[in-house]
Length: 145
Image (tube, rainbow, N blue to C red; front, side, top):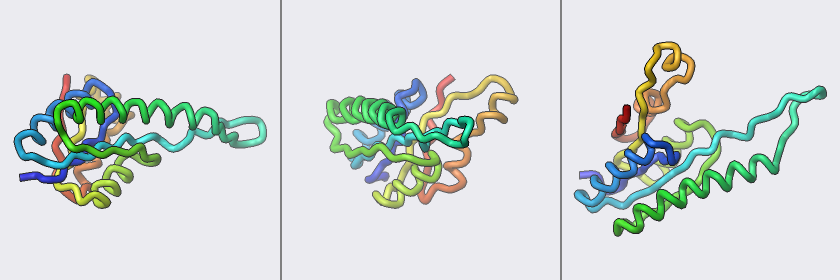
């Protein structure tokens, strides 16, 4: 069974459901858990002269992601798990797969919410779908509606 599980955690309702499912799976398999919160790269604001980098905005965003990660780490630690976590920055799929390789994960758990319209699915894309294609290990997609 899986002994090293990576949860891509964003604090959303699908992410929280994935956290609960990951908790149960880890209890059953006695797995070591890893959490990763992927922060998007800093958004560049287009000004009259080109791009402007906002370091204050990036620091606020990092603190928000650290709080999300901290909440997930706390919940799993309270359940008795040994868990490590990290906030990383970049493309979600690239960073999740990189981190999975780094910690030698055997399973990646990610939450997913079905989008109602085809336009929303097309416009937004699917991290979980792309993750399955690029993952170095098995992927469990926890679905909420």
